[in-house]
Image (tube, rainbow, N blue to C red; front, side, top):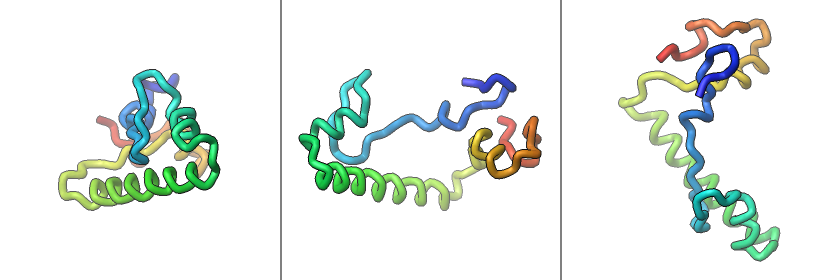
Length: 97
């Protein structure tokens, strides 16, 4: 998926993967599934989301430190928030694959 300016959106390569242990059926809203699995209990929601976040952070750390990593996938929207002068982005900031 490309943005209007021809950029690849970071989310195009970052597919949602639930790591909380909640079963999410295709087409379901993952947040609704989490709320329903927790029966609306904020304590349960926080605990499951903490599990998801810790597991994802561990996975991302492993990927980031891997010798297999070739380039970073920088989100152009977040880049522009940090560096508004980058418009259009250049290869200095973005992976051009």
